[in-house]
Amino acid sequence: MDSSAQGQLIVIPTPIGNLGDITQRSKEMLERCDALLAEDTRVTRKLLSMLGLQATVFPFHQHNEHQATPAWINQLKQGKNLGLVSDAGTPGISDPAFLLVRAAIEAHIPVTCLPGPTAFVPALVMSGIPCDRFYFGGFLPPKKGRQTKWEFMATLPCTIVLYESPHRIQKTLKEALEHCGPNRPAAVVREISKFFEEAIRGTLAELVEQSNQSTWKGELVLVIGL
Image 1 (cartoon, rainbow, N blue to C red):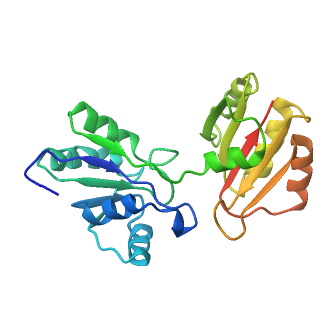
Image 2: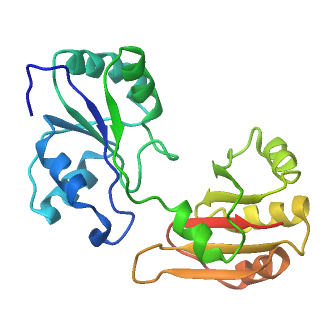
């Protein structure tokens, strides 16, 4: 890459499970960028090692993004091409990216995002629930604002897609049942693209019952139909 020209911010999706999901162009950008900004440098270095790649990696996560953004914008202005990656999936989708992308745009720095893995799209398709219109809510607030969010989502005339962790999925399903009713079709999709990939489908009442009897591990996506 020509470092004498204005730099570019390249948002690079990484696999959410299966390494075969990474694109050839993503691999090229991971290797060719002047530096990579990573949510967790250990995770990114492990990925690079498995791919047989080498790159300079710096931390960029929710705890330092406000302080670090101005310095990285300055690097971009000086002609550096920076790649932005998260631990898994597409940066900016429930992962750090927005602040740096917005700052780069405001500084008239070119920004591009490569196509690639993200969990909610395959989960939505595998759910068997209509996906022509949907609302993506990411992770719900742990406490404050959670009730208000449910009251809003329960009125939406479309499919709802949420991310959730294993230790909170039971609580979230019970809240969904309370606000949306027991007969709404739903699915919990976990471990997408991994060996234990699974889609658990049923009504909200049935999924609450199953969650009482099962321990669902891994990354979870909850899909709720009308």
